[in-house]
View 1 (spheres, rainbow, N blue to C red):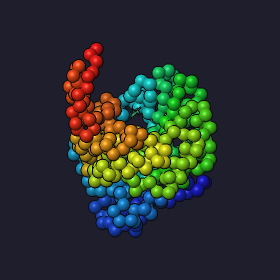
View 2: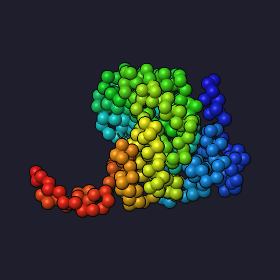
View 3: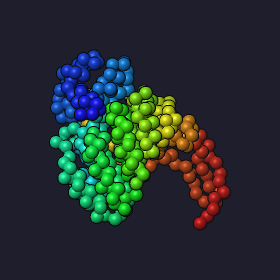
View 4: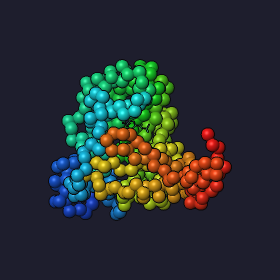
Length: 349
Ligand SMILES: *Cc1c(COP(=O)(O)O)cnc(C)c1O
């Protein structure tokens, strides 16, 4: 077994172990972890001990998770939209393939809380059938491996999936979404990087990281990102906007700027999905738009993510932007990032 697999086996999965690392009344949380399992990788667990660590709120269960408040388990209708099991084909030219139902650590705000860590896993047969479907669908030009965390798979399994994708001429791009650079940076081994580098030569590979707070940008994640980049991959980051954790301009600005310095380009800032058990993390749309407006003043375009909401019912992602064109026409008015109304002699077509 590889060292990262051994480390993964040592993950904290029970409240008693958690309580040894931070002072916490675990009794009220038993029902929570019964429903939504607890998992914290060994490296994350060590960091929790620091007081006020933003990781605590992201990974330690809270009673509020049991308050579904009428929210659906699957707000984006992923299960009903699945073309075949594990394949969410919402946009004609790109499809999301769920290759794993577990992660190295469970984010309490997970949009797939309904299943991640709660199923018996995804069989390779199911993945193969989904790959067959992709192979038979010429419109699909891009495949996004997601989960769960695709990097919980062994190199052998991941290699098999990538090999099948590489043999599909219509698939021009592959993305992998993974939080491993934070949750288990040891997973980014030279062997994995080799595998990814070889695939990248045949089919361009983008890795989407998931960092939410500048406190997450420590030495381990930094090295993991550097190694992935050295393998030739393009790195993009997705951040989830989380109440009380990163919903401040200074926090988001530092996160995005530091990631850009690591050559990890901020891609999306996600409005929380309307998933049951996660309402306590949610901020208003108006607050998100105000934050992105302020970030535009703080950050170079290079470091600025797009703020997006995934529309309920599976209608897709939509960018949310401050209204820039106040009035159209030959004497148009534009609203500048600082709020000034600027006349602009526009074309009329
Ligand atoms: C987010 C998402 C994508 C990718 O969308 P981009 O805007 O290209 O990043 C693809 N499929 C599904 C189902 C998604 O939720």
